[in-house]
Length: 51
Image (cartoon, rainbow, N blue to C red; front, side, top):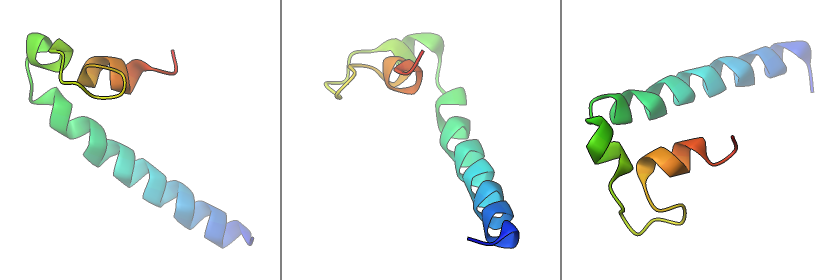
């Protein structure tokens, strides 16, 4: 892996994280915490599962 490739993947990762987190930011806190039957239950718990 070249340094250029690593930088490109880091930029892509940042872009995807920004896109991913932009969606739940439009929800209310209650909507994020609603039980949805997902693996971790709610969107909030899914996004927070590593903490």
